[in-house]
Image (spheres, rainbow, N blue to C red):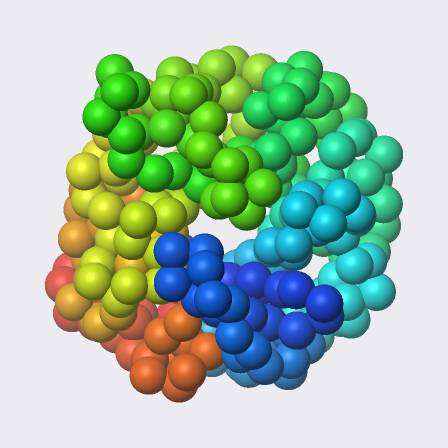
Length: 254
């Protein structure tokens, strides 16, 4: 691994507050997004991901004011997702300080949205957000879900990821719903499967609970690791994760 990997804290936001649960359920308050964004920037985060986890469920747009306030606190790439349904939504979010846009449910409902965004803004702006769960009926053993993990589809996760890349997705944010919030480690089988079919960077998400969990995800093929609970609670800092990765021989940004 010659390129520096990225360590990315995630802000799952609902009603203007950061929340966290287990398997996308029983969400509890985890703090103010602006304060947490500032903390993670100061700790050395490589990027920041902001996901409005109830925007699609509530059939509304992302809270633009909170996005802008967050963007004003960080000088690293900011990915924003949740409630994005059109290229105009993307334009507005970019105007409020986002650098990249995560799209999930709306793209599954209307795949051409991906090419509309990529053609207008470039693939580097477009992140396909995949909320994945295990399902033995799928050829790969994995399917995608929508509406913040609440609605399971019959769409094979690997088939969908491959198609999304063809339509212009420049990055895959792969979140394991089964591992989410459990702190039992990333789903390495899922990460490796996505790496095998992806020609774009893969971000591993869901399950980080200890320093020992991050390096295996990167060795399984991820280009970046994303976590939430362990950072929000103060159990781990960005610096501790980077030091552990460096000790494992993995290149990180200082």
